Amino acid sequence: MRRGVKARVLVAAGVCLLLGGAVFGQNVLSSQAGFVYYWEGEAAVAGPTRTPGDVNTQLRVDEQLQVRKGWAEVLVTPGAMLRMSEGSALRMKNTSLEAAEFALEAGAAMLEVGRMPTGNTVRMWAGDSEVQVRQNGLYRIDVVAGELRVYGGGAVVKLVGGREVAVKRGLALRMTDTEALPVPFDTLQQDGLHAWSGRRSLSYALENLAAYHKQKRWRYVAQQMFYSPDYDMKLYSNRIPEYRLGEGPARSPLSGRRSPF
Image (cartoon, one colour):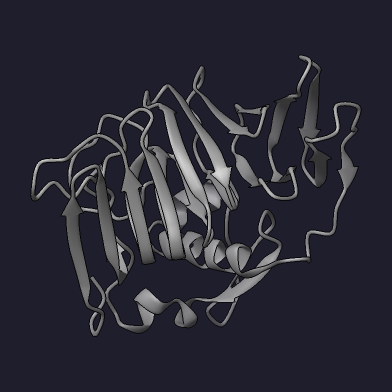
């Protein structure tokens, strides 16, 4: 936990409230998708009754994670991280690492896939539309707009009625329109979720630059500046909060190392 930040964990029947400024997931071994890895602000998990003291960092099937204020980060697989915006809600449908499934029921989220093992899939639902991801890349789902944006990689969307649409890098699809086709979008239109997700991504990259360079996630430019083609943004390493405090990013609950990628 970062210095100067206080956090509290409050457990109640049926709901586990996770309150605090910045909290990292525990350094434990997880064999399931849906590990609540990190959050800032206020988040809550709604699900079955919990025993007192259970901090509920691992989401179970049909449990919902609500981000009431700030941001949250959920480990989908050892190489994929979902970052959620304020006002978003996520419900787990399948916690298998090989075939993770979840529904985004409110708000917006960005899925960064740095390493997708052969044969593995990630399925996301937004409304009645299903998004299937099999490639490394960066994806954004917005429930309010009913839209998928692919910043890197590629996905297949199954719309209402069963029509499937392939969405490639640099294209967006309005999933509420059953006749919609992918169209280009401006990658420079970036909001707070995009900026926060980029900073979190770079914090992991700084821990394992060799892996990220191989995946072409972040590239060193000059004088502590890094560039990501997927995020289409430049960041300075000395402006990453964890590194300003000299503590580095959180440790991975899966591998025991700091970066989950």
